[in-house]
Amino acid sequence: VQVSGKVNCGTSGYFTISSNSVSSNALCRGSVTIPEGVVGIGAHAFDHDVNGSIRPNVETLTISSSVLTIGNFAFRKSKLTELVIPNNVTSIGIQSFIFSEEITSIVIGSGITAIPDNAFDALIKLNSLTLPSTLTSIGGYAFWNTQQLTTITIPDGVHTIADHAFGDPPVGRTINYCGNASLTGYLVTERTIRNTSSCTPAPPLSLAANAGSESATISFNAGASFGASITNYEYSING
Image (cartoon, rainbow, N blue to C red; front, side, top):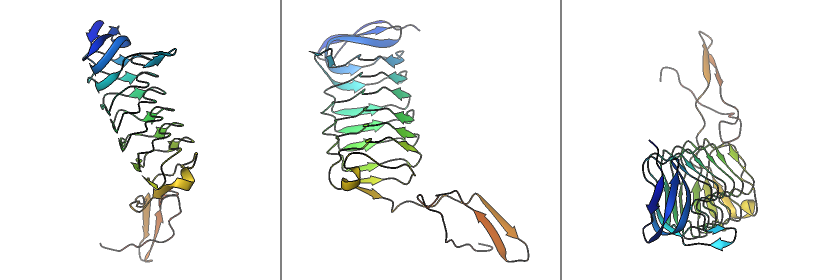
């Protein structure tokens, strides 16, 4: 079904849908609900600062179950206070929510496997972040200068964390993370506490018992015990 036309924003203005994608807005202010049938929110669609021209702004956002993509700079400098990216969204663009300084809470759905560069850069009031277990990579400066975010839990499946992804953190930030990627960037080492207290070794890859010899050979993933080889373990026979 082809979706096109103009949709009114909550307070004033409207946004334009062309070929099932939000392409632009005209002085859109207040609440925005992306209707069903729309599959993409295009680059700069609700950008508050295009070519230096400051425009009215989005304050609340509801994303329908048909949306798959959010483009580059789509909500730059928005006035959103909360952000929920539903499970159906599979990609977000670079700097898509950069400088959205009023956002305090973000929940990212399971459709997202990668967070690109600067996606949530300079969200100075962000204090709550929920990342999906499906996430595998976090781009450079993705959460740079999020000074109110004192605790972050990174899913173990994240294997790539670019430099400065969590740079310029508050002093004493706790990052709960059991994966093997390095946390690097501006003042990350000096200010961040990496918590591994809840990390547990991965289960054995294989177990080969030798009948009659009371011996067994057990194989583990390299670095399965939080980046270090497992050298001590216990096992029992018959439970």
